[in-house]
Length: 96
Length: 483
Image 1 (cartoon, each protein chain N blue to C red):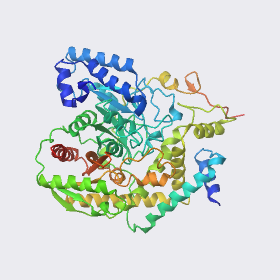
Image 2 (spheres, chains in turn orange, green):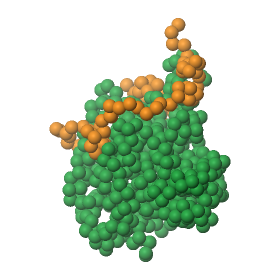
Image 3 (cartoon, each protein chain N blue to C red):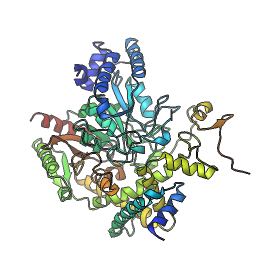
Image 4 (cartoon, helix red, strand yellow):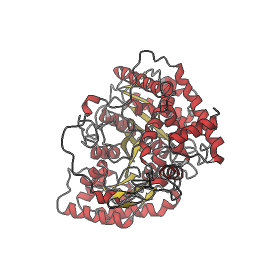
């Protein structure tokens, strides 16, 4: 797969289109960045656990089993939707 | 410039509570300042004079009725807010076209706290789109310019927040820092900015970029001003599951503390190639000042810090690609009119709504999380992140704080780095480590280049060491000012 095709494949997964006139440049930058990431291969990580958080005390930050504070009114939330009807979000037809 | 704008936050608080000047007069002084130069700097995306003055009048009424007193952190003090922090009833765009029309129905916790403490929310600051950038050139609306030299960038992504403080448009501002986005613009604009320990300040209402890295933090003209704003915004919040329950403290409480005997670690490798010589000289001068105040300057090693950029630019885009999936044209913000079905509505909305840098990071994030590449990139980065974190924990057994430069170069010119995303990423070399490890870090001015451009001094400390870090920064500021 060429690097342009790879970019198109990934963009599709992310629900993005890459404009044809930008594709070359996007693919070049993308390849350059991925190439740079390869430096991580130099690091010996045998036996090292990955971490995905930065909490100093992760055990401290479990959600409490308690009632949530009052929520935002539905009307206020739906007001920001590009299209709505009867306090529900409207989207293009999904089922024929 | 009106003399009100020259007062420190503590001085302002005193004269406002003594009713020598009102919150309205304070707001008018800063508004006048902002309006005289904003067309040149472009630090705000929203600056609503009528709203600000109406809010100031409410604060004056609260002071008169005794609802705001000496115990309030910031009575009548203007605080500009980065536009990725939600404000009820006020446009919050994140510098993106995709949220160009979004008026949030709620306040972020930090905004609620500001209001509770009597602060005046003073406009919404420009930023790189969704906080992705190091120059504020990625704002979908306009770039912000550095008030110290308007041909140059203010840094990013909180460039509007730093520029607003540097230009005296507001005495304080809030930014957010995912990989240096408070500290790098603070360094470029010659102000002080602090990224708190992960979990000290609630992220509720901060539009998510990299959830395991993001923190909201204060920017101010002095160390004490910055500490006063940190006092107002820190503390546990049940609406943020990563919020710490440790509780906060008075971050101004140790500002006059004796710093003699503080052990400050410096990795010699940070002064090797790639660092601007004038910055190296200025940072070394600041270290000598600290030594003359009785600090022990100790060489330390952070062996994996040279891999921090790669680690960060895998993890942050991975988290961003997930967080930004919510922008689909359904619930809020922009929706493309150009679509045949639901799928093309999603694609066209996102393609037209996001800018180039945001798309690039979504692509990187999607790639490193995708089948076949996950282990080589995301898993590997998670492991190296652990090593980077361990390096810091080891170092903090030997030293109390770590010091060095905030940025490898002085502020660069607009357009200078936009052609090479990788080169832009490398400008975060000294700042991303603190986010990966979740530790607090700050930048404060320590000098200027021969051309008069600001230089930032970077301090990092163990988790929850903000008070100690601020005490060293305060002593250094005093020492540098006495020159």
